[in-house]
Length: 214
Image 1 (cartoon, helix red, strand yellow):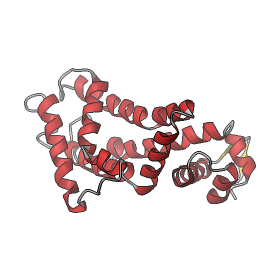
Image 2 (cartoon, one colour; image 1 turned 60 degrees about the vertical axis):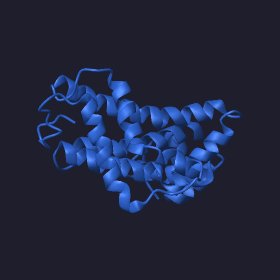
Image 3 (tube, one colour; image 1 turned 90 degrees about the vertical axis):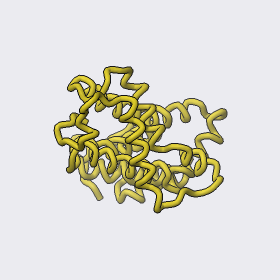
Image 4 (cartoon, helix red, strand yellow; image 1 turned 180 degrees about the vertical axis):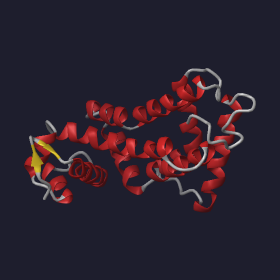
């Protein structure tokens, strides 16, 4: 089990704990117990309480950690601007459309009226955080003259919506499954449409230049 030092776990232990919490919550819903998370992470129950005030704090942190992992590759990944956008978009779709996360999103929708604070916490830790992280990257691209200077949060919302497309509703409401062989075409099309709206003439993303600030 992970050692605890000065009431806070080692970063590797904490990362494993958050990964385990994300998986357990997605699989079993918010009703999942702290004991279940501790068992899945291979830590003592007290380790969780040494790092988080309770289940709600652990839940928010686990969801936010999943978002950070998505954006790490976009900010620090290999390849030029366009390649990183493609990799991010493919990863983003895979994460959002994963059976576990879709199952949990359906649970959140079903329970939102009964537990509005929980639904709001989930929204803030996932959709809202995604949009704000993307907005920060777009602000840099706007400041560096690669994208038109527009509302960055609106631009982020448009980009992420284009990447998910209509497949989000299709899967969320169990109306079907998109063709896996069509993933890359959809991602390239989404990025192309976004750049048509926001890229300045001669922008780095269109020319696949590594100078792009995204």
